[in-house]
Image (cartoon, rainbow, N blue to C red; front, top):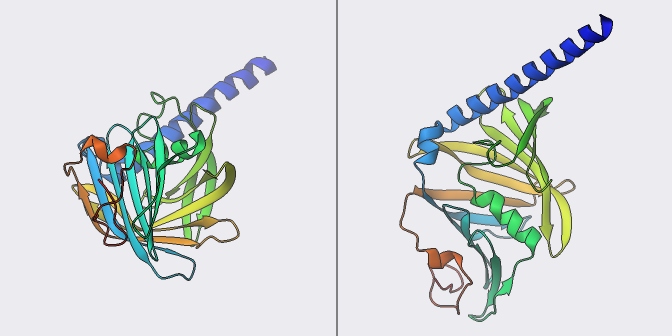
Amino acid sequence: MRNLAISLFACLSLGLHAQSVDEIIAKALAARGGVPAIRAIHTERLTGHISFAQAPAGPFLVEIKRPGKMREEIGFGQKTLVQTTDGASGWKLMITNGTGDPVALTAGEVRNMAGGADIDGPLLDYAKKGNKVEFVGKEKVGDKDAYKLKVTDKTGDTRYDYIDANSFLEIKWEGQVENAGEKNTFASYFSDYRKVHNVMFAFTITSGASDHPDGQKIVFDKVEVNVPLEDSLFGKPAAPQPGRSGQAPVSH
């Protein structure tokens, strides 16, 4: 009888735990604008500025298209870094004085971009995507209480999403980022949420490693959705031509 009681308690606990995770996810999706509004977005163009530590801010452009396509243009000084993925492969091109040659991204770097290229995010239809989501507990993010969710994708990579316990908007992300074959733990903090096309977007994102939590800051001036974006934007970058980012020339 005692073993039966323990087994029954464990089953009930697992059921309640799973329900609490799904409740948090449902409220988080509703806070963003709701599933229909999120699914109604097919492309995104986010334009703004990016700064690293104390360096002057440079232009920043990111464009996303379903399914899994993404292009970034990052300007700093007389250089522009272009990174693209078509959902399967990826490339990067550093343009200096109007010249540069594209190189293939590593598999890890493509996975990095894949997370940002997912318009829906990891929580929407998480089970169908092969993701596992676990409720870790409540933690403070700054002065705010947040629900901490552990998200493990089908490759085994793990990230943590922190959902504001009051607004149910994501206020922090934490996970590993691969660069040049090395993996490091990074965190991003999301603020200044505004509604665009009935969906909430964070207009300020501060990111960095544990020892430099504010090493990078992105401030968006404009967010556009459902803009026409050709598939060719997300392939291997071509030779530089006058671009749109307002910095070094970039080809499209």
